[in-house]
Length: 215
Image 1 (spheres, one colour):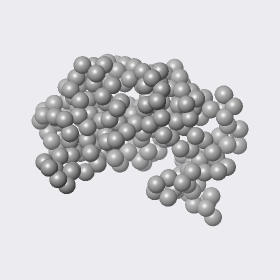
Image 2 (spheres, rainbow, N blue to C red):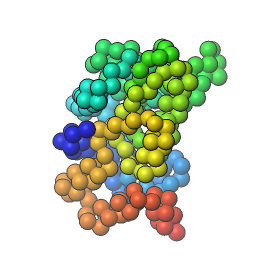
Image 3 (tube, helix red, strand yellow):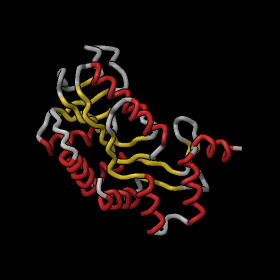
């Protein structure tokens, strides 16, 4: 997406507290990894102007990339509301993909309706390693759908994620990036040059950065 949107959205995520930066007091992720950044895009749900900015960005991406989807699908759970707003904007059917099939009822993994041969855009809120989004891509492909793109609000920009999407031949389009976020944070005084260097070091090798901090 265009740089002005990436910068504007990065500033918005910082302003509403969806992204927190703490190089000197790292967060512990669910995986146990220590990280100097934490992104909770669920906070965008409370801010109509930010929700509209995200929906505008996704809709613009669909048009610019000439994706022509038949269905908009969201990842459960954080991608669901943004998929719903995008589907409403585009006047398209909407579905969502669970992390695994239900253990009761019909055992669905995909809720809503996705037919074989349909072109699907998958919406995710955040890309870290990309694993959950790629699992949803696999589920949609198993249902016979063609996943024409994965759309996400933000990505940490890990090389592992880029490699995973490339290997899966799943085009990824992200509205704002780690670099755009850091540029906005530095400009608005959220980061010192030392903290900026710490964040870049973490992005380059998060496991090594985490291990060094713990030790």
